[in-house]
Amino acid sequence: MAAKGVVSFLALCALCLAAVPAPVACAQGKSAAAIAHNEKGLEYFTHGFHQLEPRSRRAEADQFYDLAAGEFNRAIGLNPNYVEAHRNLARVYFVQKKFSASADSYKKVVALDPADVDAAVNLALACVELQRYDEAISHLEKARTRTADERVRATLSGYIEKVQKAR
Image (cartoon, rainbow, N blue to C red; front, side, top):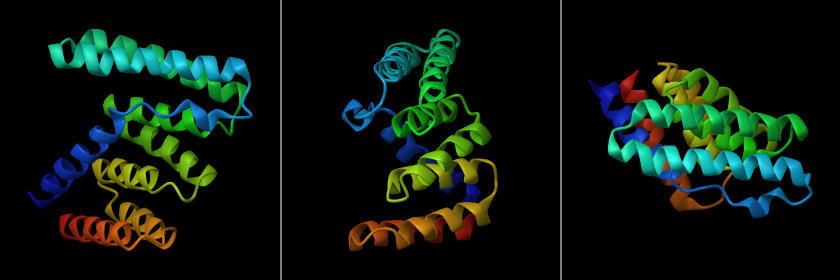
């Protein structure tokens, strides 16, 4: 039962993060085509998540999520180091409950941007969903060492405690 509480708490955090489109400004230096695919993917994702999901139209939302994933993959194909496209792909996979694929995408985000605490938390959440608690803890501990913000460090410590109790 404790694991379910951690999953519910962390899932709420992830969904809050997933509801906010990633900024395109981080795409400086990326090709126009990669940016266009990422933006189109965000349009598909946003439509599915904000328009269809709230109306209990999950089957239609899934179609838009698949379209979004295709666009993000095209952007990544054009630029394998496009952090925002990897992050957006990870969000789509998480919402689709494809937690292994989500974890893989979040690992790429963390590898490209080690200071991205949000990506590390979402990576840990995907690991919790997969019942890979030790891996989740490891990602949270690494994230804790990559920030000097004491409030963030305290929050990460709290997450670590919750995952430890869940395993």
